[in-house]
Image (cartoon, rainbow, N blue to C red):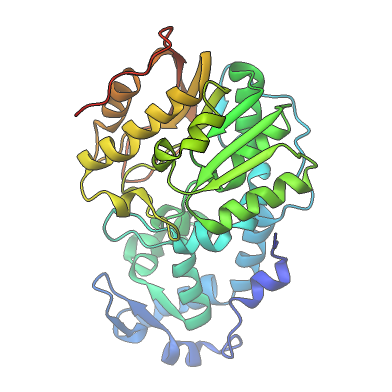
Length: 376
């Protein structure tokens, strides 16, 4: 398990031209247009605008990057949860310092390697690496609107976060709170690992057993390492697609009727496109195939491995290109489980391109002991 120090993080952005004058910057700096074509900044901006970029972005590079590290990646004081749990209103941004350990462990995957199916929305770390290491500025940063925001005092961090894509992370403190207040889990199954955040939150809320599934090998390995670091010796991880476990006789036999709780935030079809492993968006060519092949089979698996009266809880939201996704997913879930409750998750995945909030959906296992018949 490898963690990143501030020194290592800043080294990523080091460049031989870190001490340029305005004249040198004007000659060197470039702009990446929406088409991907890179042009000279002096052919794209006025001298006054170039001077603004030089003073506000280029010269403040170390300030911005150091502040970003301390706010988002510094884990030294924020590993163990010390606050009481949230009880009835849930916010993924409350005590957001507990996300830092997860961000630090996976900052390249979360900020650079995970992409989105939404056009023209580049990953955040790709943009700032290119800006601070290569002196190539994304066109969104140097539009009139952005330059006016800089002039008015809007922070660079707010501008960058608003324009570029950062894969979401669940706060371990949210998981910790949900278990204390709603789930009361002892034996937990998570069909995804959520960048290891589920395990960190559940362990600190007093569970007895954790079994998780993911397709990204490094996430699987790191999750087990974290369990060891937290002195939790009853964790197991399966590094394969969750729906494939339906055809694993040993898994189905070992865990039949075993877990009292299932918890996860499933992939949002093509909203976040992850690297590594056999991703569900790579396996299924269409949304309809994804619903059948991934979601329905995963819900059938969850029904098989849960106890009578078990709780299934997942967090999901619609987004603009799939405005009925939640209804579609819940319709399938109701074939196996009975709806119990739902809670709006504040500061969840609400993107600049979407008006939809994430919702925490809670279901209970149907009283019938037999699984629904498979569709032929």
